Image 1 (tube, one colour):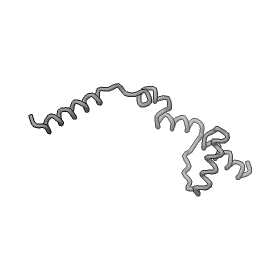
Image 2 (spheres, helix red, strand yellow):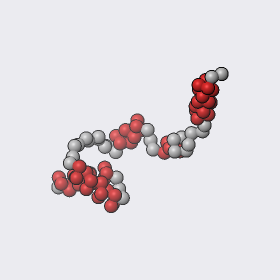
Image 3 (cartoon, helix red, strand yellow):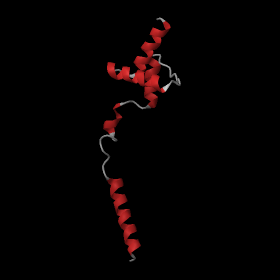
Image 4 (tube, one colour):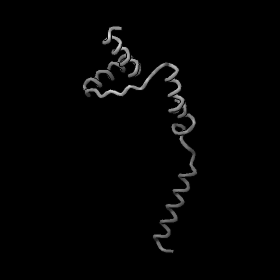
Length: 89
């Protein structure tokens, strides 16, 4: 056998070993703690949540993210609160 043939066989062996290796927990069933998109959509619809895309200035987004981190809540909750305050509700 040629040297290149031996290297090809070695590569095939290593690929086979990688494909047969167990999936790490972070990619396996343990990672499935969050619902998939369809389930998430149903949960959002049950809470009367609607996707609302907006383009904002980067500085404003940084401020909102900082506020969310400070309060240890999600962006959705912070944006909803700020919109309610801004609209006077």
